[in-house]
Length: 237
Image (tube, rainbow, N blue to C red; front, side, top):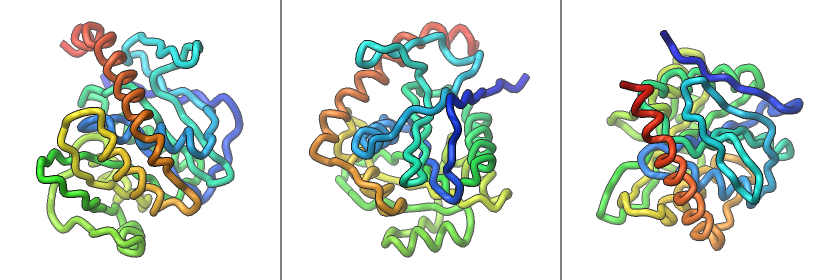
């Protein structure tokens, strides 16, 4: 039986013609760190919850308040939504999560979905490469001065977003960036945040505060991962 991902919107949302950023952790925590930095720098507000009966039963306490581990934040002035998660999802949930994201983007008439994936490297290569689901998405990558990937594989939620986006005609860009796999992922988080800012007019990253946010976000994700490990193992056996 296919698990269901539910989105609960807490207020009205107007992102028509705007952007959606996938902040689910992939390899490492850079996507969550970059998303967290943008949320704090640009004063996003929380407008929704991403939940599933198959998610671990966890409350993430921040600033004395309980939170669902996966939430939706928006900045209506910039027309940007972010799916931010402290959960590292099991691969059995990747496809349904990506499809849920695409359905939500279609509902709110999102122009471009931005996702990311880390490639482990010890060589210190800081080049960010883009993959586009459509010709128009690939043109955007080139227009902002990023290289377009010729050949390769993109796994997980980003890969499903690309495949389904190409079938739907939905512009999706996946940013491929380098990480050494050693946390906190400050350097790769800053690299990713800067690349996302190139794709979204008016978006900025406070790189000076990113290192502190990287440490906080990584610690929170690790704690959530540890607390949910036994629950997740029992569910996926």
